[in-house]
Image: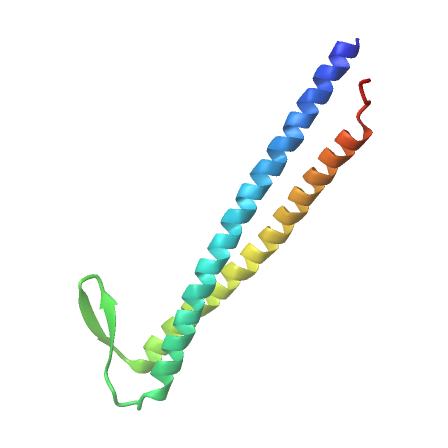
Length: 123
């Protein structure tokens, strides 16, 4: 009977370790994605600032594949602001996901500590 409980404990321990590892990997990925999106958003903000400073009668062009299309300045600003809002929303959701994954990782680590702290000591 004790071998069954040892086997059960071993399975639980492995499952907690796997949860901790998966949470840490997902957390690292989420942090990387957040950083990339923040860089993208900053570039968009700088582009919007530059476009807003030029006079209204200046032609603006947008890259489309290997060519450029003339686009009205107002339309360009609206499109860039829309992209910025999307990135901001993505960053917000990634931050929420990161907080959840941090908590999941922290809980798994605390469970592992409790298991090893309360484990019977062989003499």
